[in-house]
Amino acid sequence: MALLNLKNNFLTFALLGILAFAVPRNVLCQNAVASVVTQEFFDGIKNVAAADCAGKSFYTRDAFLNAANSYPDFGSGSADESKREIAAFFAHITHETGHLCYTEEIDKSNAYCDPSNTQYPCVPGKFYYGRGPIQLTGNGNYGPAGQAIGFDGLNAPETVANNPEISWKTALWFWMTNVHSVVNQGFGQTIRRINGAVECDGKRPDLVNARIGYYTDYCNKFGVSPGDNLSC
Image (tube, rainbow, N blue to C red):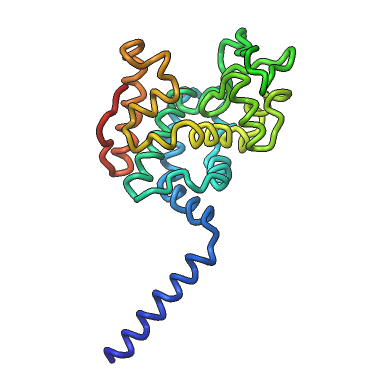
């Protein structure tokens, strides 16, 4: 009987090993992210926003998970590291969009065109104000984001506010390009990477504290400690 159980256990581990290689890494990571970002958690953010918000119908969990499938390194650390990164990501998303209310900036008067960026030059008549979950801003972000994702960010920046999946991809692209590498240094460093010049070093403690509040709340919901170095 002992020999039979040993054989069965060996076969079980062998099968799990085969499945781990057979299932694409992006699918495994998407499933891990989906287990944390439940429909209840996602709706809990949106439910705070007013009923007439554009984002109420635009931002969906399905679109987020489809976008996350293209970024398998997002939330790919240990269980606790994964939860902290997801909590940090959605803390900033919540802050930037007013609980997934806004798909684009309220003040659309600023084109956010940097004429010195000759690699990604502004297109006349186009505005690069904040759009999407992370409020992607500036031709210096729209250009490379579009190039990486597969849309014309410079000629059609409005795509970020019109296509839900591309919208989430821009947020994840910005995160993986600029923020992912400092997540393990504490939430404060993620604030610095996203809006440090405006908020950190005592400039806007109210906004910093708002971001920290969302982060610690989401960490509590995920059952993980928020870690150290929360502020910037």
